[in-house]
Picture (cartoon, rainbow, N blue to C red):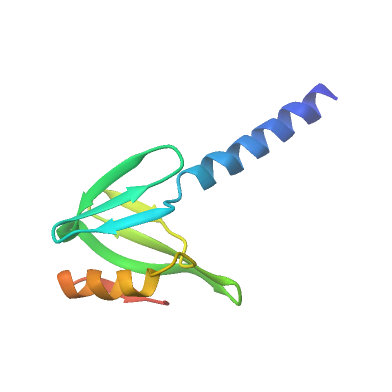
Length: 101
């Protein structure tokens, strides 16, 4: 029983940690992207963005991943204004590869 509880806590904690790292709010300025998650707020310069590609896509939405020179950020395409965000980001940095959106 203790092993089952420990395993359940590990699974639930992992799911919470993963979901808490996904941004719920994105602000795009001329030179910086600001991401707000449940746990923190962080920024990356627009010129460091390399690509935005779909991790997977199904009838309920797409799970895009934004790659930049310092790592990657998993996003949710179901956010209000997501496609406008992509269009503006591509306008600011035409070298960004956008695929699967």
